[in-house]
Length: 310
Length: 310
Image 1 (cartoon, each protein chain N blue to C red):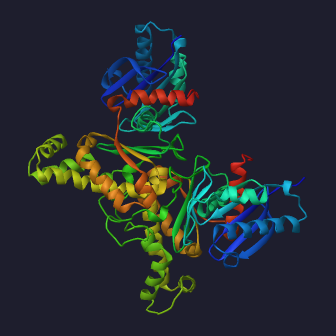
Image 2: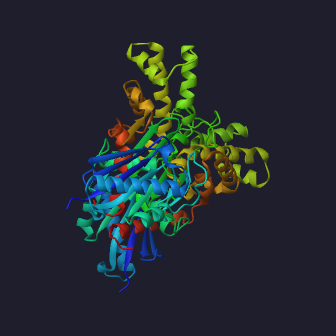
Image 3: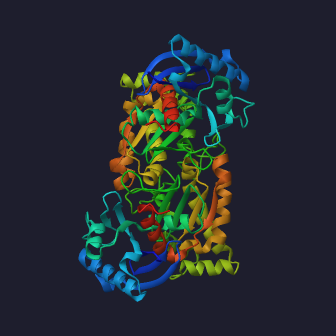
């Protein structure tokens, strides 16, 4: 009897479902527009359960062939009590026992975690971090997030809020950050800041970060410098974490990572120069491998880890 | 039959031995001057073994009553292969299989680790961090070191070099650090820097940090400000690690921690203001509890952890 996990990646625009084999292969997919489901707890639960049942029946499977359901959510999740404390940008979610709600409706073991943690799990088990014991997984976007695999386990922290590498201060003084702090790495490498900076640098009212990368590809020096400066800030932000955690890998994903050929060499150079000898020498910088599938696949890893199927 | 662990704390000046009960009580002690033993591998091994045998016989014990020997060393230790890669300030130690060397001479299971890691183990098991799952243990001295307990386990990192909280950069530019980097926290809160700063602030050729604290105790505003500024740098250095690791405790030890009544309130204030909401709200700052005994007691914890006696 073939067994599968359903991996669910809840994003702001799409909810992606995947029927995932025990080896991490996505054998069937299903997509919903997030807006089509509704954002309150029972609407979302109903939407997820219907889609799961559809995915099961479309693939001519029996429920008992589903080992579990994993869900990555954009929010803060207490993994021990399986409660969603809050969702980013979606109001009305407060201390929701979402695992129980789903399980009650569908009768399949369900596991939930923060979306960035789930991406870290995916890259560690099947992606750029395969075989690595200690890694930092960083996603560069509007927000700069992260997940930590330490001692071959996802590290969540005492309050399930660990991994916030975007909110490492890079200076003692600096701009206010959305997190409430100031001078965080995110304030100088987050997309909003970079887009503003690009407008200034190129003196254009509208220029996207993709266009900056395209310019760099054509040899535009300002564009190359733009990404090199960004890389220097990212590396400066990571040095402390590299010295403290001594990981063997930093996996970088998100939109900005598309400019990796300008960013990574400078990151490596700064780390080599600035990090401690052992830490700097052993840490590798790699691009994420699973891209858009990381959320689905990581949800499979979450479920299997929680079910202790390795 | 009573059972014990021998905990050994190898320092630059003294080597301290303790016969430690399974509950962490030091029931008998022995001290050697480090200089009296000799620093090469066989001299040190010989000195440690003689002292252990003396401690056993003086307490009328049989060898089989010693569950194990734990040793905290000032250096880099590969805990999996039980090899001392190098010792700080002592030349000639390179890839030394010190566990095997001691075991061969004394016939008792022996475990070795870095001295700061051992202190973290002690504070977690019997000290300020008792019952805490995730903590940072920081020692403020000439060097600023640290040990991490994450998920109820000492976290050593991929190259056994984790915990270097003193080498978290606090700015993108700054003074060169002994570690090879620059602008590390240690460059502005390490004892050497603080002693120089004190001379300037108080316009004296000789003033110790203890004297600065004594002045602060008398209400001297410059002295109070001196420690408050130090506290601000320490907190600024820790914010990134607090946001990233979401620990519930930072345990602070070392000479500078004697000024804790000026340092801790400012650290708490800066962390509250600058760290992320959950991380900042839940992290406590406490003084180490075991003081000079931490090395001996932590070596007992190391041995029992490795022997899986909990």
